[in-house]
Length: 344
Image 1 (cartoon, rainbow, N blue to C red):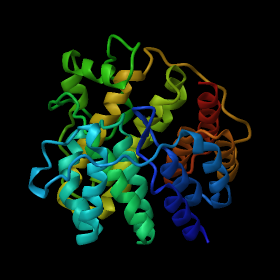
Image 2: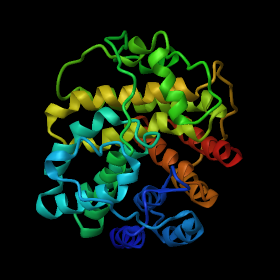
Image 3: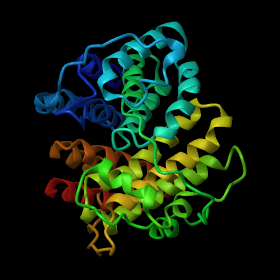
């Protein structure tokens, strides 16, 4: 039943565009996947009904992108329709894992695409495909790749920094902040190139190749979720992505060749550091945790009832963190995030 509910949602959204109002992301497919994942499939169509006025039609293509000429239109949002057509052809011709393995290293350097929504949308689609391969899920996976390609945006290059693999929270606390946080994501991220300390903060100490990557990546997600509790007040919506972007990469690892895990870890950390630099406040703010700690279903219900896709997606990631450590405080923090986002 849950599987069919997700496929119904994907079919309903298939002819919608990846953005609205020129640059805001279409969050509906990601929120639908998270709701179904956590047992709230019955709420999906009602949630989509409320979100419908924010959806736009799928953009038309301008000119087909040749297979060997993909570099030129990369990062060109006016070619979004062409990218949608391109990946539709790719996925009709080859298995999705083959397409992912070819395109992941091409797209990964532009992980900032759509304020990281490109990789996040792909991560949700991959998680759905790992559960079950269906035509609607393959189509949604192609839409995620197309959005990432159309909005492809590299970050200022990281260096070989002092990142400590055992202490990502300290590493996040050490990320320098951009001097001007008044404008949008592109303006903030552009300041990283001139930010003293950015190369070191965004770099990582190389770790052992292979099997330690999921552990290190999960630790980054855990640290970003916990840090949201003390810093999320400054930008409740945008700081969500410091956790959801690396979690999207973590969810994609099982579908990737192990040779791509190391670069994935590096890019995920750089994305988390970039969102932190662009939106985090200089000082933390303490909060009173919920007492008693809520249950998972209660937190997800509150997120769904809020109507906000960012609340749903952050709770979805917080539940992953809770599953790894079993800390009730994480669920209390997730409930607090819904309140923050609702008030933003």
